[in-house]
Length: 397
Image (cartoon, rainbow, N blue to C red; front, side):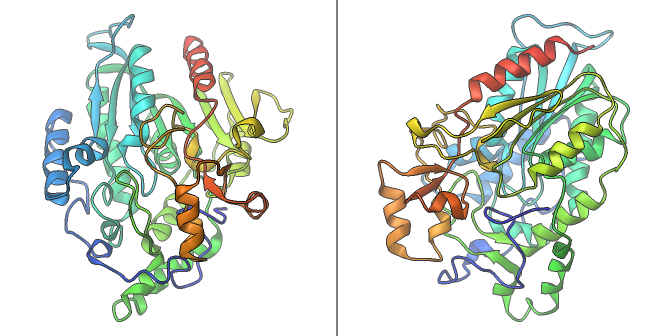
């Protein structure tokens, strides 16, 4: 099930954080990117159309080009040693899919890794994302699935072997597609969102009254200061995630699988990822498990998540795919996640943002006992994760 902090908190029928922040223009639909709009296009055309749409969405902002670049879908050709396909330009390709309320920015570093390791890379922008939080009010998960299917179709035209890599909701979408498409040769899943609390099925009920009281369509209303990820979060996004997870196959997977997940994750159920991993029938499987203790399970590599010398108390859902040297979310990055203090006091929120020595980790009651806490936005073991990924790829059939 999906648990407490972050984008997907327990549903209480109204927004439960940032309650002193009134709804603004960004909390309404812009009419941009509300559904899949790439049918019949080449992937390069799809990227150009998305960039034009994003410029329209963010027109007038001082950092518009930076925002567009981070939110846009992208592609890259392999360099270095790579295998040519049989009648196609490349042997291997990977489609990258970001998470719910996120953007392709979160997949950039992984894209560079796969590019260096001989993969043709494509990354999609999911409908409802990259523009403003209100564009998730009317989106449907089938539009996300259609976007992934389109990306796979574009990739399969150029490669013999299609692989899918997804973060959080993107991992769930990758699994959903892999179960239906025999062209998919393997999966890479990062902080996969595979289960949501059953009470999330009732989140659609807000539509009965939110037309009159628009604030009731929102789980969280936040400042939205992150240019690559929504901070405000609407109930429809919860509904669509629940419907997506209900559509996932309960059967056993029989393709190579790489998973990286945090036991400390407070956004999705890491136990669901661990249980799913052990159902995989294929002999090539690998899991990195960021946790306080070693689970001592087959094919699961334990990575100790707490690094007190760096004031890191635990891993976090938001951290797995981001490198410490990332200019935005990294160790010295420009963005700090202190959203958990907004509903408490302006003083705590400001102190967290300005502190030079906060604790870092997942937002849990236990971690909050240590003092000022920022949500960890990068993976201190990212370089080691790339080593594990490279070794896994070397073993692909």
